[in-house]
Amino acid sequence: MLKDASAPAFLWADVFTTAVYAINRTVSSSTGNITPFKAFFHCKLDISHMWVWFLDTYTHQPKDLGSKKLGEWGCHVKFIGYPHDSLGYRTYDPSTHKVNIVCAPIFHEEACPRPSTTFESQTNILDDGDDN
Image 1: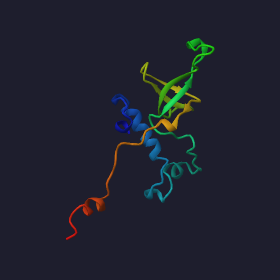
Image 2: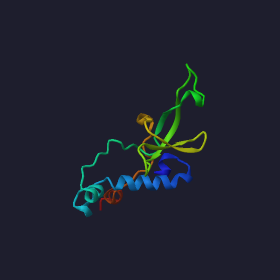
Image 3: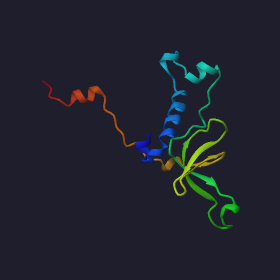
Image 4: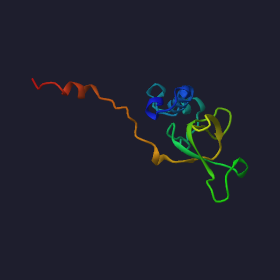
């Protein structure tokens, strides 16, 4: 995730916690084809709040932080995860190098590039040889 997003290496902990968060909400055969979250909490899971890691996101910038009446009211940040102790989303501001928790950001999913990592199955590798 870190490599595909071209994100700074110091965000590795945020990548790890977000990956674990997603894995716990993914169907697993070891838990009887239900998510680990449902197996532990015995409740229906809602994943509508989940977003692509390091997604372009915009947050509201209040007047007291420098926004002008006819100027931009949003600040461009990157989504980096879900906070443990509160509602909202963890964001990283590349210009100030600060991490904040934001309650209602605007996600710009169309701007997210496709992953650069590709995988080949074992059958594709074997099919590349001669037909003998």
